[in-house]
Amino acid sequence: MEEGRRLSREAIERALALDPNLAAAHAQMGRIKQQVDYDWAGADASFQRAVALEPANAENIGFAAWSAAIFGRFDEALELNRRAANLDPQNADSWGRLASAEFPYGAARPVRSGWQEGS
Image (cartoon, rainbow, N blue to C red):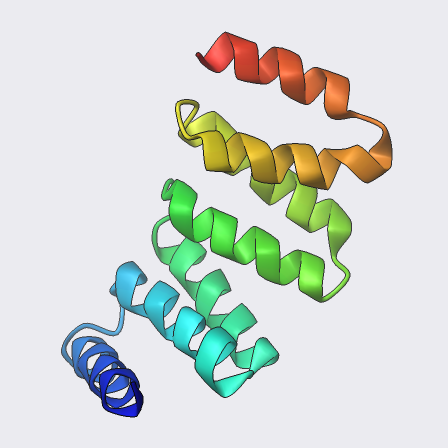
């Protein structure tokens, strides 16, 4: 397992060295920082960079939304989850994350109708 993590990190670092504007590499580096290094701030920066480079990538927006919520930026997380769901209306995970983000605001009902429109 450690070797797999090492190889993954090396591949991502190599990709970023070849193209520092590769959004997918920034997103995957964010996941490594988040899940392996427990570097939440580093992961947040990587996710934000990925979204800045590819603002229409729903998966990267979902990563950034999760990170925003971890840091207590709930309004930002909510908006990012809305963007992700609107960009990929057939993705049930995006709607689930949006419902989770909307629930504390008492706004789950609009999410449900939005989900029905997306199907």
